[in-house]
Every structure is written in C-alpha cells, then in structure tokens.
Image 1 (cartoon, rainbow, N blue to C red):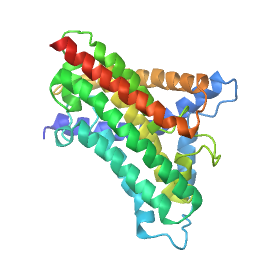
Image 2 (cartoon, helix red, strand yellow; image 1 turned 45 degrees about the horizontal axis):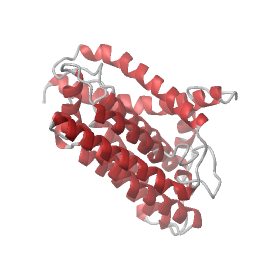
Image 3 (cartoon, helix red, strand yellow; image 1 turned 90 degrees about the vertical axis):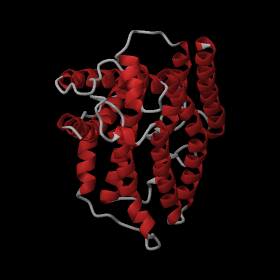
Length: 315
C-alpha cells in the first residue's frame, strides 16, 4: 500500500464521517427555504449528535445483545460502504476488496440487522417498521444492482473505481443507457433513504413512518450512531450517483495533489444534489405505502431498459 493510497483512503473515510451530517442539514435547510419556513442551522445535525452522545442509553428489559450491538454494526457497515466509494480519488486500497455487488451486500447487511433489532423488543411499531423496511429492500436492491450492471457494462468491471476511471478519464462518450439508469437510481435512492414520496423523515405518523419506526426504542449513544448512520447512507448514495453519472473532478490514482481540487468539486456537487433532493421532496407528494411496490418496480424496469439499450447500441 502506497502512502498516497493510504492518505486517500483515510481522507475518504474522514470526509464521509464529517460531511454526512452536514449534507443532511443542508437538505433540511433547502427544503425549509423552498417551503417558505424558517430553516434550522447547518450545524443542527452535529448539535443533535452531540446531545445524544452525552445522554444515557435506556434499554428495554427484554432487549437482547443483538439490540445493543446493532447500532455499531449498522454504523460500521455504512462507514465501510463510504470507504469503498471513490469520492476524492480512485486510489483506494479497500476498493479492490469489494466491488459494486459487495456494496449492495453491505447495504443489505445493515438493513437486516436494524430490522431484527426493531423486532427484538417486541413492540408493534418496531415490527411494522421492520416489515416495511424489508419490503422496500427486497424491491430496491435488484433495481440498484441493475443500475450498477448498466454502468459496469461500459467499463467491463463491477469495481466503482474502474467505472469512474473509464467514464471520467477517457474521451467523452454519450451513453443513452445511463439516462435510464440515472432515473432508476434516483427512484431507488429516494426509497432507500426514506425520503418523499416513499417516506417522510420529519414525521412520526404510524401509518407512514418506516425508518423512524425502526429506531423508536433507541436512545442516547445508540440513537446517535443510528442517526449518523442514516446520514452516512444518504452521503453514500449521493457519492454513488456522482461516481456513476457525474464522475468528473475525481482524482486519478497516484495523483495526490489533484485531491486538493477534487475536494471543492465534491462539495459543490453535493450542494447541488442536496438542492435537487429538497426540490423533489417539495414538488412530490407522499404516496400510499401500497403504491411503493409499483414505484420500485418502475425503477427496476427503467434500469433494465438502460441495460438493454446499452447492449443494443454496442452490438
């Protein structure tokens, strides 16, 4: 492992941990501006995490060791996801160990544990949220895989770093199949991050909540880790979208000085993406939970069409 690779990997992880809460705060602020409401501070997610880390964790009497261990497993899984996504540079030592398929597996691992933990204490809200979360995951993961396969056909590899190097550091080529894949990815990202129209992260209504139902029994540092993990998931999906559909600005391997330019480019792209996410949440209405399968089936269909379009045009 070279020094530049180790530095790039360390910066990749630290940047994800630092910017993930800020991205969530930026999206919330943009949404308040668009809805003509008073916006909270950019730093509100950090203040919330600080408050929760300094509070005592209260556990149910029947909670098992799985319930206690889940926040650390979920946080660790999503941190590892962020570590293998090229955000500043493609020189990532962990990237060859996990490709895009393993990336989806890490998302699934976090989902399984948080769903099991929600059912562990036996509350009605936890079981309801776990069933809804598994339903969304069952439908969203195949669509996400099809999106990744559409991009992998271009680079002949399922490694995200190889895909970025192929798309960003070669001659500019228009791939029509990526347009369908991008639309499918946006739909999957909205569902996976519990955003409108699939879920509303700012409410606790029992008929609509999905993510909030999973973490109602947590408090203190456990809740802080899960909230931080939710921000990391939004950051990870944002960076996956940038790596697949807007990879320009990411430094090549063995180019450590280029990371100085890649950082402001990344921040700018995340800021623009956060504005677009807030705009989508403002324009769209919350759909009924029974319409979510149709929504994600449409995403899967779009991803498959993108894959077929690429195959037809390359023959």
